[in-house]
Image (cartoon, rainbow, N blue to C red; front, side, top):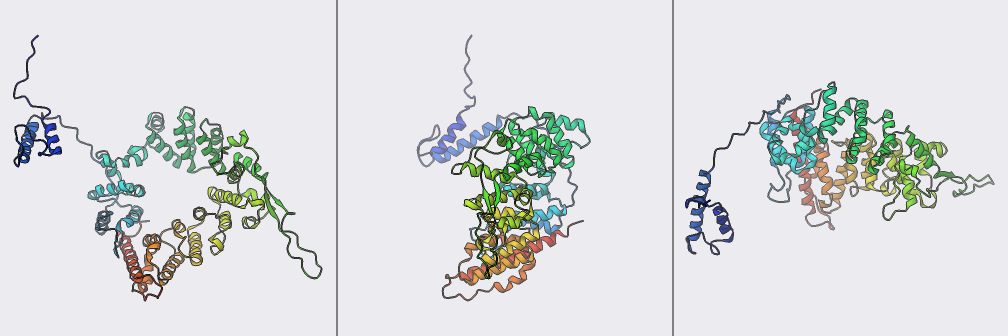
Length: 557
């Protein structure tokens, strides 16, 4: 069989790659074929590229037309008012770095107002302008904290766009079931089919949605396939039971304590310990009670009274005897046997037992005392920090406001907290168990007594807008810091929070702070001007927030 040669005018498949290589190397090092080095070489390269482009395009065959995408699902929500739509466009256009520098001066940071605007728009049930969706999805892509509110506001069209643009695929991952429609609650056949055959994200979304409507049905659905699920899937499914957790979930969670996965066992134990009436909570209470008791013989005796009267009895002391071993029954109930590096095993086990025991245990065990009286008792042999820290975790887990108040103590107390509040993070968690008004009042007292230097983390757990007492405490503390003559930059975090969280009605109180103050002799040079600029930005932002809410209109009841 003879071999035929290709015709001389056949296209050279490597020509384009050679032209690209020449452009990368430069025509002074490599010239196109048939060209000599010199001033004409770059022009010859461009001519060759243009010719090759025409040749490549001319050789393309018409492709089969792709199927047109289905129209986006309709959005039944009412459109934004025109003024609010213009405001949204301005907020989305204010990207980081768009101001041309890192210092904004008195200009508000519009991007930081976007989460609040989205929350207000969602509360009013508005739909976004279609032309704003690309910028909204780009903003949510860059900031994960924006995604829940942004996707709720964007609605079904965002999912439609996300299927067409890989950059927005996060919307599909964030949406329940990857954006797939969930079956109707009464469609049992489709529910079972989706649970048996659906993708993992679809199954998680189905379980969460069913749990919010019919907790028992969701639990039964999970129990039916529990033995055949993968360990990592069992952990995710088990986490969905946190919503509407109740006594009826206890039998299923007790079975999960024997799971072959340590993480599943630990999660089941945590959920059971959040049910004060569960059998696990009772077992933990028995173990914890064996470790903590009152000793009336070890306390310091008060000074003997005059006149020969009988001396007062010694102040009771809490004594602790930590566990000497972690037996298999403790491990089954979620106690982790191996302590972290640098932590003693006995204190590690004790903390887990006390954390999981119902807090009502301690009033019964310690002489009927109230949580405040218990926290005030001295603890012998250096166990106070460990014991109170475990009570802090228990108060947060069991959402016990009375114990949280006792452990927080008075906001004006030395070291700014009760004996159990060993860190700002713990105080913030304890505050989270209190109502919004009480939380704001406590933080306002903290700021009044200790200033703003440690208040940032505590302010973050307060409801927005801040209650009037808290707002006044923040403004007063900022004014005191200004009068001290230091630069405002060390308070930039609190100032940023105030811009987003202070009630816009407080802007009138700030008018007096806009002027540049007289600088004391020991003040930092130019500090007064920087403070005036910071307060001007705060006032401008508060007025902008008030205008944003007015543009959106009232919440429809």
